[in-house]
Image 1 (cartoon, one colour):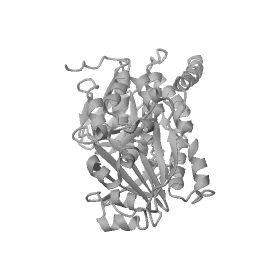
Image 2 (cartoon, rainbow, N blue to C red; image 1 turned 60 degrees about the vertical axis):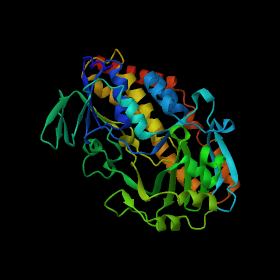
Image 3 (cartoon, helix red, strand yellow; image 1 turned 120 degrees about the vertical axis):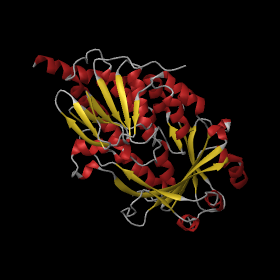
Image 4 (cartoon, rainbow, N blue to C red; image 1 turned 180 degrees about the vertical axis):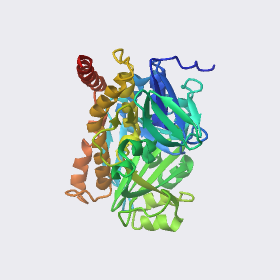
Amino acid sequence: MENPSPIESPFKIAIIGGGLAGILLAIGLSSRDISVQIYEAAPTFAETSAGIGFGPNAVRAMTLLDPRIRAAYESLKTENSWESKRNIWFDFRRGWGQIPELLTELKMGHESEGGGNVLRARFMEELVKLLPVKTAEFGKNLSRVDDEGDSVRLWFQDGTQRTTDAVVGCDGIRSVVRKFLLGQDNPASQAVFSGVYAYRGLIQMDTAIDAVGEELALNSQVYVGNDGDLVTYPIEGGSLLNVVAFRKHDVDTWNHPKWIVDYPQGKLMKDFEGWGSIPLSLLKLLDKPQAWALFEMPSISSYSMGRITLLGDAAHGSTSHAGAGAGMAVEDALVLTNMLADPRVHLFSDIAQVFAVYSMVRHPRTQRLVRHSRESGMLFQLRKPGVEDDLRKLKEDLQNRQLWIWDINLKNHLERAKIELSKVLNEKRKV
C-alpha cells in the first residue's frame, strides 16, 4: 500500500543527505506531521554492503522515535548464534598464537534491550518504506546555503534552488552543510584522518566455519594485537560473517586522493604478519581487499547556528571502535524530533532556539563518543598509554567501557531537553 503524503505542518524542514541519519530523522518528523524534504546527491537511496551494529541505547531510541523503525530492525537483526553468547557484545581474544585465548566478554545488559547487527543496505531498504511518498529529491548536490532571515535558501549544483524554514545537515563525514555552518576555511569544517584504516569484507558463513570453527564464526569476536585489531560478527541471519580488520597507518596523514583504496592481498597479509593462524585464515578469505581510511570530525563548540544544524556523522563523526556511531544518530534524531514536535514550538523564529538547545543537550555525549572511540581503538591495538600490552590492565579497562553508552535513560535525556527548551522559549517570549 502506498504511504500517505506528508501532512502540512507549521514549518518545513530540509534534510541534506539521504543516508541512515537523514532517513531516521525524516521518519521521526513525518510521523509527527512535520513537513520534511530530503535532498540527496546520489541518484537513489544507497548504502554500502557492510555490517552495522546497534547497542541497547540505540534500540530503545528506535522505539521512542518510531516503533516501526524498531520493528524493521528486529526483522533484520542478527545476534550471536549460541544461546550462551546471545547477550554478549563481543568476546575479546588474543590475536597472536595458535590458540586465540579468550581475554574477556562484554555483556550488553537485559536481553530485551540487547543490540544486534544488520546489513546497512538491507536496513536502509526497510527504512525507506516508512517514508511518505515524494519525500526525497535525488541528484541534489548542495553548493550553497543562505540563511535569509525569513527563510533558508538552498543552492544546488544543477542550478536549482529551494527555500525552506530550516536545514539539518545529515550529509555524513564529508558534510557540505558543516562547511557553510563553520566557514569554508575553518579547519574544523572538515574531517581529519584518524591514523587508522580498515579492510572490510563479507564471508559466506559456511566458509568461515570451515576456517575457524563454529564458536568463533557464529559469535561476535574482537582479536586484539599490536597496532591492529580484527572484528568479526554474523549478519543476515547468520548466513554471512562481517569482517573488519583495522590497522594503524605508518604515518599520521592519508595522502591518497580517495578514502577507499584497492590494496593487494599481499599488503593485507603483511599488515597482519605475525598474527595467529585463526585471524590469518579469515583475512585470507577477503577477496579483493580495499583499505578504508577512517576519519573523524574535530570538536566544535556547537552543532547549530540560527536555523541550520548538524546531525549524526556531520556533527560528530567518529571511528567505529565503540560500535555506537549509528546509534548516536538515532538518539540525535529522537531528541531533535521531539523538540520540533513540542506544541510550544509554533513560530519560525522558535526553530533557532530548538536547534541551540538540541546542540547543547547532545554535544557533551556525542563529543565524548568521538574521544572514547579513538581511545578504544588504541586499547584494542595495544597502544593505549598506561595499558599497552598489559593484558590484565586491558581486561580491567574493557569491563565497564561501554556502559556509559548503553545505560543512558533516554526519557530523562528528553526531559532535560524539554526543560532547557522551556527556559529559552520563556526568555524569548519576555523580550
